[in-house]
Amino acid sequence: MNEVGTESPLAAPPLTHPDDIVPANDPRLSLLPDELETVKEIVQKHLPGVVAVICQDMAWRLADLAPIPVEGAAHAAWVRELDAERRSAWINLTAERKLYVDLSTAYGAGKWKTLLLLLTRPPWEAPASGYLPKADYDKLQAIRNAYQDRMDATAREFVLLREAHQKPSTRA
Image 1 (spheres, rainbow, N blue to C red):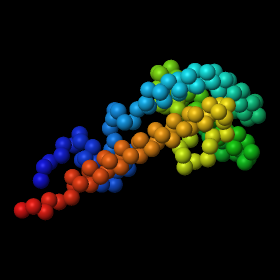
Image 2: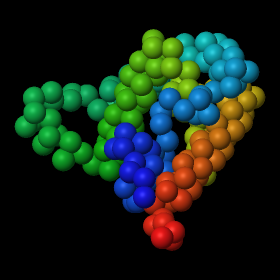
Image 3: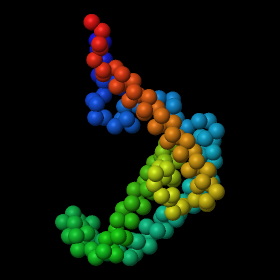
Image 4: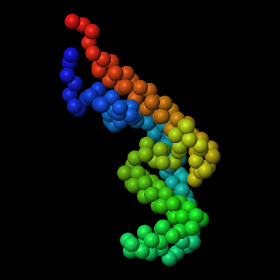
């Protein structure tokens, strides 16, 4: 039986999730040129407004939660003592802060696929409540769904290849 090097996706352990064995640089996992152009156009048009809404939401939550201790032990105690409504506001603030950082970082690095994934939802989840106008969100969501279908097909292909390679040879 042929040996598979540890660098090969076929050498992945049997319990590896299919998304983990597809090489990140596989061209089938890139946006198609027309998809990329649409994503760029929509993101460049709407990202300033999206970031402004996120910042405004964070400012309101910070005002509702103030004062927030920053020292480690005092902060931990403050978080533990939050009532349900304030805890929800804290969780939303934390999520908005992460989204703001992720959007800013991806935009600065020109990572259009990452921006697409941040601004849309996987097909199996409920649609995002929306930072974007519905028509543009629907365009991005259609691109995300097509990308997800390509990614799933590629992952299935790699799993089948790995499984075929791992079956013991019946030849003598």
